[in-house]
Image (cartoon, rainbow over all chains, first blue to last red; front, top):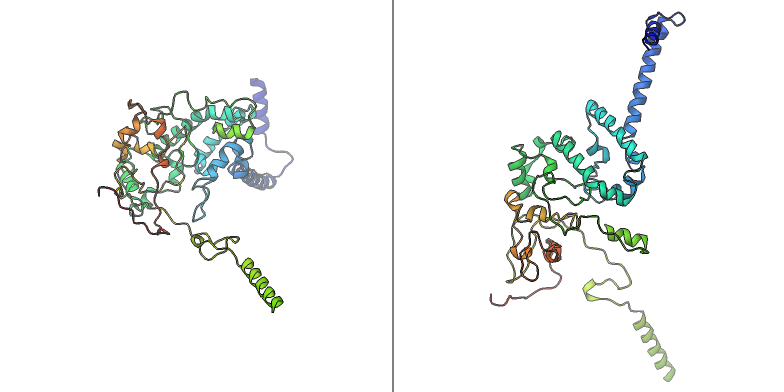
Length: 227
Length: 140
């Protein structure tokens, strides 16, 4: 092991016998540009809508939910796509998130949310991870567009003014504390587990996904009932 | 004379038949044609509580409720209006009657029969009514 390392170290240290200094510097420079550009282009591709909706679960369960919200279509035509909220914009943190996301590739390959049942069963957990991430970075991905300093409270509704001037300005709460589920539909949140730390809504016992449609029911009808 | 009368009658019948049917509520557009749909307006969003028009009227909603999720997983209205939340949200708390089942027993959460808020409480459009209304509440 150590001998092999020593051998490679020697190869790296030895001056080049065949290539000119000019070739190595200019070639290295061009190669660097190609590698860096290619790397960033490939990474940017994983931030696009076609990539996010390229897998079954995201196309069928998640994308239609986003389409109904104001972050998808609105009067001014500015769209927040998946990565605008789920991937940090700044490079270093983005790389950290992308490395973390390699585990999600694993989950995709092994189909951890590839059916509606599995998706609904995991949904709360997945949501809570995102809420925790937003709480930890003070809703950075919201603030990439919604800058507190640029907010004109006088253009907001009275209740929004009250909440923002009370809880947001004092930094007591962050965006996600109140604005969860704005681009998704929310799962059943057991009391005390919502981002606001106040009890969630109590729905009839049995949890959210205990309903099993009777066998022999038309698949479409069953899917509607389960919603 | 007779054939002329018959021809006139036939013409009148044909004209009457060809006259397009119109419904006064829809305006002058014939029934078989599509009307120009009215322009969408933004619903009232001023947070001013509107007085009830009669004693047991469910209060109307003085704010926008576009895209509010109300299903068995989550109720966006109760996210602010539930009695446990109004201290923080400063919203009008849901009436205590909504926490009772029909036997009058008080429950820990909103009764399922009162769960779908917008069955009774509705957001308001700043629209002029098509037809006038002279409703007077009894005892007022």
